[in-house]
Length: 254
Length: 299
Image (cartoon, rainbow over all chains, first blue to last red; front, side):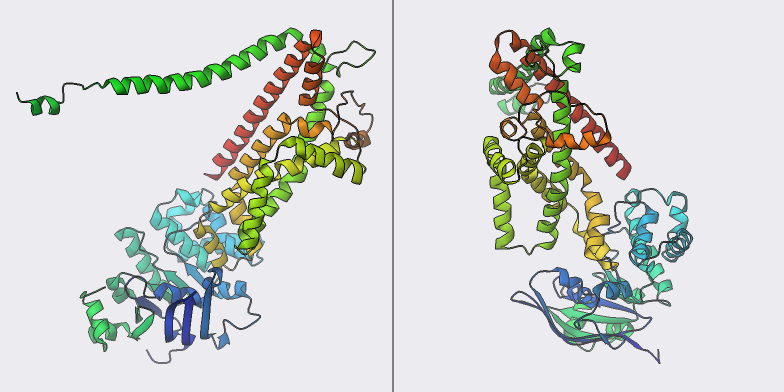
């Protein structure tokens, strides 16, 4: 794993929801074309951290962020940053599958259309490639123009992943993408993540430690707003340096 | 067999007197409601049929010195009022609702605006009429005109449209918004493509409620749209538009006039009422059909 580039670099990140100090001095580099997992008990700040990477926290009233966030060296929080471009470059898949109440085709074509692609042929190609990329094409190819809400939860989530990759982001943030799914669907999405990491940098929040161990290259362990430990996944799970990490991954608390 | 066994026995149905009485009472309540509604409708239908005829539907109202009794002019005026009021009030109301829920910072100002809209919806309609007659008649020099009436009615139905649309917008799941924003969609694009289509049902409901209020309104119209019931001749396309500047009494206003004159014209008041009932019924059925088709298309 030499020659790894840093995709997103964050330094001295502090985040407050009103009076609540939700993230404390986080320093973390997310590597290009790797899967980075964030683990930790509920309320530890891992989702908050993930959402601050594409400024989804801007939507939360009373949220204040300090520190530096660099995407390929560019400041994400600088004045004049176009958050629409930022979110095209850093896409997101949410905890609960949230396809729009429209057809599967329109769901996947939504992002490209937002960014100005109008040609039918081009959209057709993007939709097909994205659905193939999200390993759901074979299951939905005969009903592209049916409502996405008619799909199963697992299929919906893969359509959401297709929707995210349709705008060709550089980074995909996944906020517990399998927590609402059954084991079979979960497995499919985990396999999918392994295939997409050649093209994308993936950051994933998960409650499931086995999942982090199975799929990620790097793991960061969060606890009450602090990042306790960050390193290669193998190291974190086999030789944790911090006692608290060891306690968590061995299931002694959490 | 002990006492306990009898109580636990599955075969024996325990009937309590209080249950029966309560059930009877509740049944009676709904029976009264149904009977009253049906009774009123039947009464109006029977009385209304007396003066009902094709002539009644196809000629304008009684006017001296002609011996004409009819409501065609009023039907057309009412349709004009409905269309113009909705054309004015729906965009403003939906726009205001979008602003209040999506753009305005939630705080004192939005609270005040919401409180004002709620108060506005509780004001008796005669006060809207009084205001409209001063504001649109005198200040805007619209005189008695369908336009003045429709603008007055627009103010009157705005609260309904705003509140209903707001509630509908609030029910759109956060996930839809996050999904769109997360793809880099600008806010207005997100609202237009995801939020509004998901709450079209609610917006339609607000429009239906508004139509009901417009068709049923009389107090706000007497001083604004006037009471004229003659038929305008539509000789050219321009007449269709200039009509809005003419006086035009609605069905309800005409009903009021027939009833006020009483005597032999009373039966025409009932015929007008029957026309109103049927109009409302038709509008409701149409609206239900539209809502059903929208919902079907979406699912």
